[in-house]
Image (cartoon, rainbow, N blue to C red; front, side, top):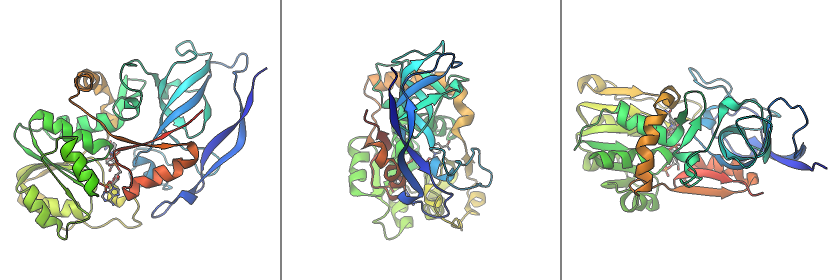
Length: 354
Ligand code: NAP
């Protein structure tokens, strides 16, 4: 006799304008789910979710319609959040997926779920890599055997968009975050001099002692960002932009002629009802700076190349990775909101106990 259990879910209540709070989401156990597939279900997969990834882009999906957005907003009301996660298969009638398989892909923020569309999930093959790397480094999407999110983002941003040269100086903002820590390590392995900015002394120490950055500073403690950048990144070659706002203005003043700014994200702007103005954009002209944005989704076809590059680096210990794991689905809203405050160190993940 199949067991019917309560299914804990995170429900997105309504669209947010400004800083989101925990009360913008509600965790309920109202729904129930049968832990067995019905006969003739047409290829459904029943999963238990093990991990969820908290990512800054999810904040943008909490806004009703973001101008120029490449991704849909969440549906508010009854539908659980969706984001990247690692589920284990409990039951499957799909020919390509079987019980006990671990998969990676887009899942709803709930304990158990039914997956109909397998184009958004992929089986985890490299099981000799710690499972959590799949949420951060090895994030896969079907179709073009694609891989995305932090690791792939750092790879595309640094190796492809920056066009780096050995010996160049790179500055990374939000440098201990999921993307920043890898972008910095890729640049170090490539032979760059790497500087990072972060929001605490603990993170400064992490950059220098664990990730091998040459220099790091706490942007929250600097009275004048221009002075700090002039000290650590004078006449700099490459800026790996993760935060936007005031930092971008001050970096522009400290870039060299013909330097490059790769625009990965602007997390300092996502919660502002009115984004900050950038005052020194004319320096792009004066200094002939190339400034280029990108979206990782456009580069998924590069996945096989990325896997080929990253797996040996992980195995040989040349790339390291820090995560902050929050336990329990009931704490998922706080974990997601925590991305904005910087209280977590490294990639933010929620682990679901079963
Ligand atoms: P993350 O850096 O781990 O984000 C969380 C961290 O951001 C916090 O711990 C905090 O660190 C920092 N932060 C939060 N609010 C800030 C503010 N107002 N000013 C400065 N720093 C702030 O996130 P991630 O996943 O690695 O993403 C980094 C950036 O890349 C984000 O902008 C994201 O949107 C972008 N992204 C882009 C793509 C793409 O395809 N282009 C893909 C993935 C991510 P501190 O303690 O250091 O302040």
